[in-house]
Length: 364
Image (cartoon, rainbow, N blue to C red):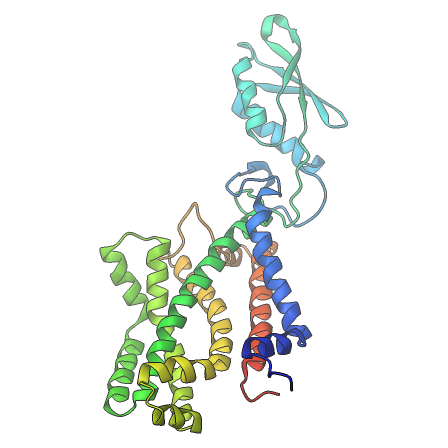
């Protein structure tokens, strides 16, 4: 006679049979790992600006190309206070002839590498007593797979860096809301009566409070920060979880296994922890997977109002808001972070559905 598989083994066995759930989990892991390691592999600092390469569309071509090289040199010559007399290109090297009636200040050559488009220049020839210089300067080969934003920052690096903040906010706030909501809802539903009525009326009162007013009130007493935003989001997002768990608990507390536990003398905390909460994991898992993108969207709303993530930090919500303002001139600025957000949302939904089926105690 073989022993029955343990609950954890049964859940794992059911989960690995669901290809859509496993594919969604793989996508979530890939997004998380990419956000963690990707910014160090793109070759760009998330805050590095390229003024001559603003709002570049997505592409694999190396920059600067011919269309951007000329305007960049004109702008740099103006900052260096010199005349751009001649430009000769030999593959990835430029030979520039710079002139000035008062003499070319060699210290101004530092503007070339500072632009991010060129390497360290070398003086090949000096003419007219320093009033003309021939400078050899290498051209850097830069790639912007998702384009650049309005300030000329690499959008791929910004999206990956923003993903760290968005996922951290979504997971942390959802975890806090999950713990509070499950404990509160299970306690209210199991105890019932006047205790349940009083606890749920408190939930109704909190529902009635305007969320933005609550956040502004917190900002009056505390400085804006990620921690403050986590507290503000978690303080309201547990309300939905509490209602879901309470509804499940009301149907579970009259089941035979709960009555048997009471007959054996198990106290309310033990019944809630051992019997009620495990049997609510299916709906809780689905609600939790929906809660993460909801928190991310809520964070983007707060950041759009200037109450959330502040520069130099960024998030997917901030990038989506920036892209929405530039959708006509640069639609890729909205498409890139939106794709990350949509992929995360869809993967969380698919994985939540699979996890709910795997955690269903009545499933075969």
